[in-house]
Image (cartoon, rainbow over all chains, first blue to last red; front, top):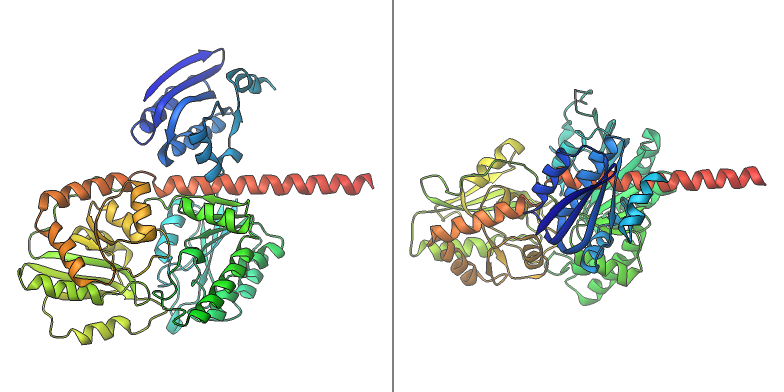
Length: 109
Length: 409
């Protein structure tokens, strides 16, 4: 699993690749703790597997962002990840976009 | 958010009481929750629940409102009336098919409660721990006659449709979601993992010195039958004497007197101990003292809370080779030794494989501990809050749209 971070103006972007599971979830949670901004975009284009711990890491991150007046947006969910979001109906809790541009632009709506 | 939860709650011994205890423990800690009402069953022998708790820093106040009785026919009505009077923002149901009674009419009529609560104008989310389609009715003590079984299944399907009239229906196994979506065309079903009760520090994977304990935990007599386990224990005693069999728990509400019957039938057997009801504070010790935890199930009716507890305490487990449990193990990262259901010889062999191999017990306990750590109950509760907020958002949006429509007219 690869985890890269970058900044796009006021938005922090997290790029994830590979299996997003209980082994990587703590690193993602730790990353939230160090964030200078409450506006976060998570790129799931390269994620091939996601378990409930990973989903919990995302919901925890979203909550943290909202508590600080921001939000978390997701984009480019691949089919196996989409299935998890549908099974858990978490697609209702997150704002999900097809592209990074749409996800970032949503913060200025 | 003011939340009411319809559920048995300790000291009630109704099924899912322990799940409710842990769920509420974490629900109270959530800042979004301002007040909790537990709509629980009345206790027998005029026993009472602990007094309400007022708000404490970081904990929502908790009120226990006993308003229904296991086995009564009017539970749905009583629950709906009570919920309406309390007017919470959300009503959660922590139930399974036999939550409201052991007789078919009482069980079925009780399950009308979520629909009646919704009819009273309150939003409802049901956490359904089993579904009719996966219950082996014969083994669960219902439907000895095929015609009766078919009739029960038909009523089960009707009841499921009624339950699906809740705003959301949560189940703990992905396959249940698929079944409900395909068979009933449901669009309001979701997966909410069972969750781990305790965020305990890594346990000791070694049992204490003394006889090695084979332990089983639960409410026995319907689909949890201990006769094969006792028979397997007798087989093991033929070759080793350093063992103790611990039967921890009580009769299922559907099988009063079951454990006493087994105890009397095995009065000659040394090394067997019946603990009776295990109070919450004694649960850790019961699991920590066990060398192996056994699931003597003849059928499964849902995700097993006991398996998650065994995982929490890093215990090796022995399970029947059947439906839900095998699936749960595969999907949630647990591991165990398997035996053929209702087969004492097979169970004794599975137990012997673990009893003779401490390294394997440790490895299995470690893996189960890691699996149980996967998703703590605190996170599961967080998911329910998110879903509840969404339901309320949608309801509010509809209400606003209706008001605008009326103004336009």
